[in-house]
Image 1 (cartoon, rainbow, N blue to C red):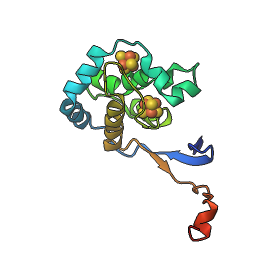
Image 2: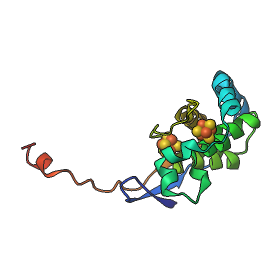
Image 3: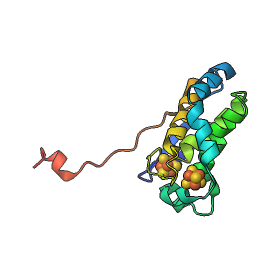
Image 4: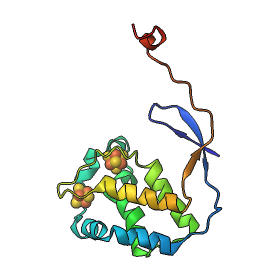
Length: 156
Ligand code: SF4
Ligand code: SF4
């Protein structure tokens, strides 16, 4: 088990999904194929200008760590799966999963001047991970949420 922080700064206990499912490269390939035009467009049009970096709050909060850059996340997830034609090991897929969940909140705020669909690529990467059982499972207690006073008083 390991710990991570949610967006409110609370620690949450999170376990990594055990490697119980065999990787299905054909299944991954099929999902990549369905999205091939958009994937190809992304990698042919991205000029690594880093404009998207400034539009990602996680990259702005971690300016020294380029792995938070939106384009970096796409390249090292969907790009990696595409390059390897879905033939990845469980370990590689778990690295991809960690990029897609630990380094991105999928807030959809990143912008590309060429209108490349960065959140769409990240969502596709997550779908592929989910299809192979590479997900995070939250199994700790959810921290108590402080409701605003008016909720306790019947919305007065
Ligand atoms: S802004 Fe667009 S072209 Fe520039 S690095 Fe990001 S994804 Fe690539
Ligand atoms: S979707 Fe991910 S990469 Fe884009 S701005 Fe939000 S956290 Fe950053």
